[in-house]
Length: 186
Image (cartoon, rainbow, N blue to C red; front, side, top):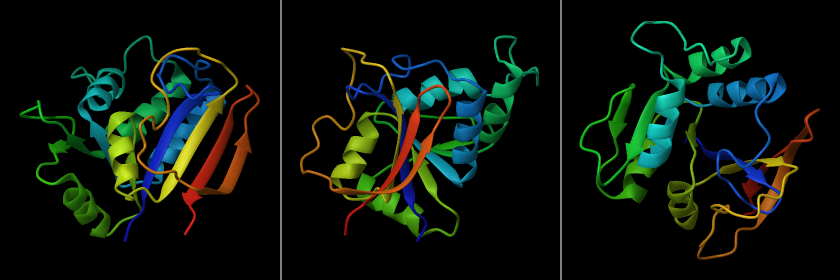
């Protein structure tokens, strides 16, 4: 069974808004590129899917936008062709190598986990909360930013039951970020 991994940036006070932390640098983008390469497919809710598509989809011109720095392009190149599954009750159609996940969420994600491959990755805020509540997440990756945001959505807010996690890897970055990889305690 391929694992489902949840990965997100988070501030010291638990804020997981994508603009709340430290701006990415070359080291963190290399890390996130390697993380994207660990999975066969991404699972997103509508908001995360639309945000990621607007930033990281290759334009029809075939040329990355001018705002994108050279060291961000490998991340975009890793994510752009990746298979994506989108959970949404409002979207009727998706593009960007994506398909809508329909029906019962637990069953749909479980079916994806049963397919052969190296893993699935989920990002965002709302969808990972639902998947964590269902016990479907096999690994949690929190990249902690040395920032106190003081506002914004917080990590797994509303979780029904306490999650006990075991630290399996830690990586410190020159910028002060710390990547903490956990798996649920059995």
